[in-house]
Length: 297
Image 1 (cartoon, rainbow, N blue to C red):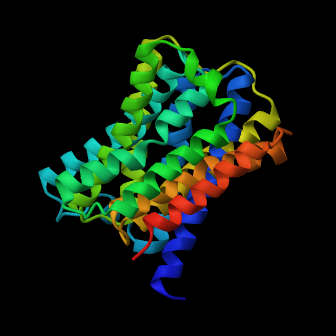
Image 2 (cartoon, rainbow, N blue to C red):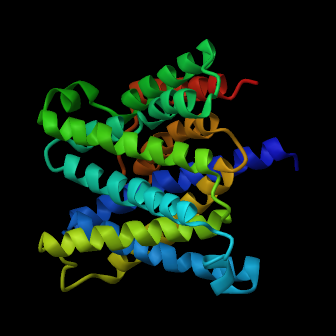
């Protein structure tokens, strides 16, 4: 298998799992689980689930998690990525969803590739070709159409909620660029462990201060959705994301994120019984076209 094919498989699998996380999260939030404890426990369990993978790959867990060659600057970068990619992205997103509709928040979150494109040009010096910019814009237009009922979703909500949604996307883009810029000497799964672990502890601390807690009763079905959300949709998606990011440019890898809402829409039809309009189908075609343009050599 060629490196290019392997890279694409990593990104398609990662974005599929990301898309499925929205379905699991929607079901659990509708069951009455508060957002901050849900996000915090989700990523704490996801971090723990990476440990067997790290142990299998490295043999000695302590040496893999705490390599002696890491400098103080490297550890600061790991903490920064954990705070940006897990704590701030998820925290800001859930805060945004308290004042704006979920479709609006989703549209704002998946402007991340635009932020990555701008930051990659300024910080990493990656080329910002016209067809690549056009592809990113096509992808965002496709995501907007796929969300459905966009006109109504963009009409409501407070300004502060929209700014929080944009802040969530910006933090994700910044975490991506920091990861590429610093080149932390950690394996993808080890970095995935630390960023989720740090983010999870931060989210749980905020939940504790905010008096949010896990409900006293949870059904077996809800635990099943939570396990899917925590392990495949979090451990798997983020681990594969970091593996792909180590092989491709920040801009190219982020371009694949447009697939996540496409998978979300398709899974919502299959799992939740939602309808699929011709406008959403058109959005899917725009996403595919934008992804092809971003990945042109």
